[in-house]
Figure 1 (cartoon, rainbow, N blue to C red):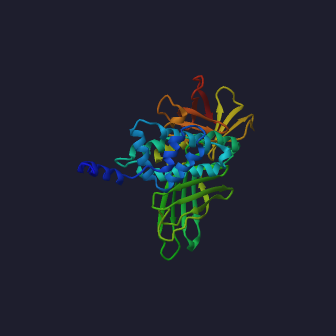
Figure 2 (cartoon, rainbow, N blue to C red):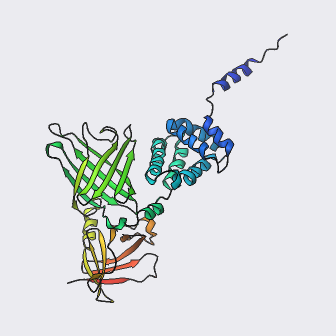
Figure 3 (spheres, rainbow, N blue to C red):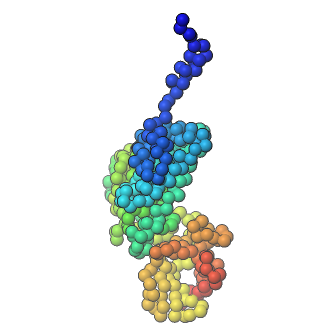
Length: 361
């Protein structure tokens, strides 16, 4: 006589059979579980980019089970792929990181997957490409990125580009473009671009429903904007608004400062004579800091950024205005006094000495 299973058992089995199975690449990676599992990690990356929501659900289940495979996957990607020059060019690896970020960011506020998404974003954004960039680009200090730029294509459209360098390899920007006659549709896009070469920065986003990649390329004529991927809609611009073209520099001023802070920054401009040695002078002009002795430059000019409040990477002891000087290294100076006649600055992390200057007459 055949024995029948209880009805609740049949229902349970039916429910189990309907449960979505875990992604096979994620299962394989967890099974591998060693630092040699690069191919398995890349398979998870490919599956994640194809269906980020499904993979994050698998990540969440693993995380809730108390297993740390997600962090292991992120660390393996970081050490063996994203920061490994043998895995690809600097531009390629930055692009892979950005692809993962773009796939994850739409979920950071999700009620169920938000925690997992934020873990992924935080780990990816924490990857330090700066040292590698400085090694590859030892002379980036002679290019000033900060400023206001304008494009005029006549009947073909106009545009304005605002740029503010934040640190050694990131640029805040806002791009406003007006399309060709007769419609003159308009659009605006803003965000953070990352330096990928000596005079090039790249920005990518999927915020508007498609992939958009913009390349900003500096030259003596200004900065050229090139749409590498995406159409106007994917870049959040109006119909037929193409921002491409060479934007001529209009100023070296930081366009994101308030009017009051811009006036404070203007007080720093000019040539300053050391109170300790009249032959030693500083000149702050056109986004650079020049150091001179007896009228001769003692070293090449360095990019000089003014911040109303010292950014976190300056390790400030207080929320005071400061100057960040960017060369092979970044150093920051607290602005102790700047009234247009006297300039007093103190090196953050130094011995606490204050360097005093008077405006050169």
